Image 1: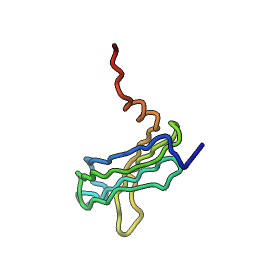
Image 2: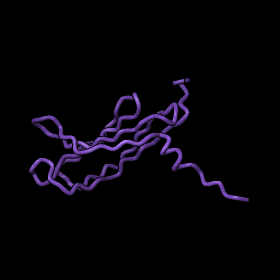
Image 3: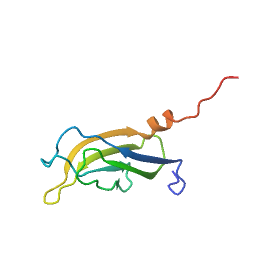
Length: 108
């Protein structure tokens, strides 16, 4: 594998979220999302303070060598005095993204 020339450049845009619960008792949380892409350095969104409806509109770019790379998303609530609270997570593979974005081939 030639790591200098990735086979895929994956752009991930984190748009927004809606939380239906009070994470830390203040009425709203301080959410951010971290993204783990294979063995690459994780990336994270900006922390949105005191909100249940954060909007990020942040785009991240990753390089993938093959379709088996796993992408993990973790949602966190930032805390000033203690460890950040893990709210939830989701994972998907590059193969799922590439397969779902292939151009549609029209019949003749």
